[in-house]
Image 1 (tube, rainbow, N blue to C red):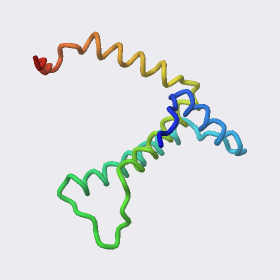
Image 2 (image 1 turned 120 degrees about the vertical axis):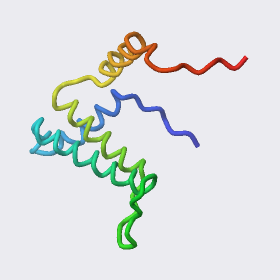
Image 3 (image 1 turned 135 degrees about the vertical axis):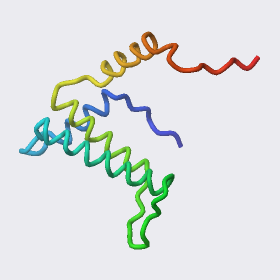
Amino acid sequence: MTQEQITMKDMQEKVDAFIGQFEEGYFSPLAMLARMTEETGELAREINHYYGEKPKKESEEHKSLDKEMGDLLFVLICFANSLDIDLEEAFRIVMDKFETRDQDRWTKKENDK
């Protein structure tokens, strides 16, 4: 069973509908940045447990990397929505930058022929 493809616009609209049902609405930009930093820290902690030198304590809850990345994505979408930023357009802008300015920055793989 395949899941329906969801665009970034769809994600932004879904998050906006969810947040829109609450009187509080979106947090302020500074609070949103703090939340994003918190979620990034949680992701970093999990990465350190999986790939670093700091194993989890027996008492610590197992958290998956996809859940932590999902939390970070949700906060990023909230942040973008609160500032009326179209993440699809932001993605196009950044990819254009990488594909032009940074196209020769790293060593490209040789084609397998």
